[in-house]
Image (cartoon, rainbow, N blue to C red; front, side):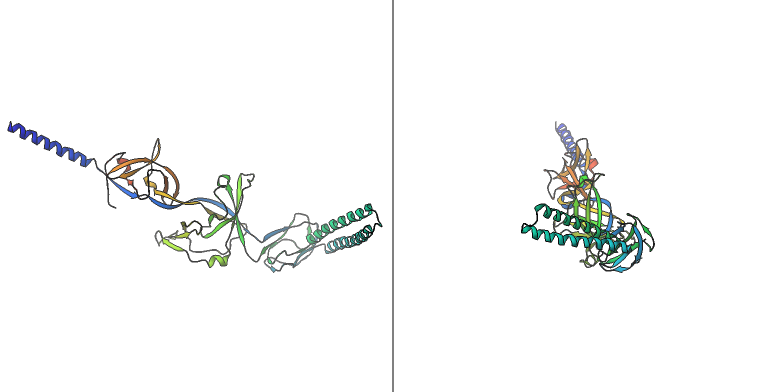
Length: 377
């Protein structure tokens, strides 16, 4: 009997050791991180076209022969300076005749109006005189426009661009004459965006131009073009304002031996309080070429929410899920995912809070309810 008792005791001890060993071997080592609230934003890249705000191309609105070219390419001119003259005699004669007729009709109307007030002329005569005066005013405005189309002056102070017209050239309506750019050098960039961004892009949307110039959208036209796009206008900061901006904070990222984006700029949006990490290039251009095409990056939908590293997200036929660590046990939780920013991905779930531990490595070895041990970093 004693021997049987000893054998039974040995058996129980052996079974206990085996059970403990199996339990120990079923604990799976994983790496984990905490769920955090982070600043998120979407990025949309587009190519825009730069326009000098005070740049204007002039095309002929009148026919005739060029008699005088007073400006040359690259010349700085003042507002009102005569730039080009087409058939001066015709222009001046047309204007002076219309002005003389207007003066005549104005004087006639004044007399008729005075007589009509005293009932010395009929209302028909008065109305006829008034109608003739209106016709004279209209004809004078047409003659004045013709004059201005033939005696062309600078609409504002600026720099003359390409000027093709030469003395003796016969000009037809629509012929290119010259271009002029205002001295203020203010510039804008126009971008075409898909209709899907109509509700996401508005005034003050942040942009990064050519990877180095920060600005905002100044105006948006939500009218759909024939191509199904909307148009937005980005106002470039003046060169002096841009260069005098407070120096941005920088964060080192990468190897100094490389020449590609070793720093990222820490940019804070005053309106939302959010900060963005944007590629920073070390040189800035004061001016962009008129009509040049330029890369533009839009920062859309800036917001804060719960995030995890993208490596945490797994997927099966039911959707996206992560493993949350509860004590020493993994819990499989399905989540909705949103914006991706800087290696983080937005998650939406009522079962997850800031500070919760989620598995980052070892997900393929575990399942819902697995015993886990967190490896030290």
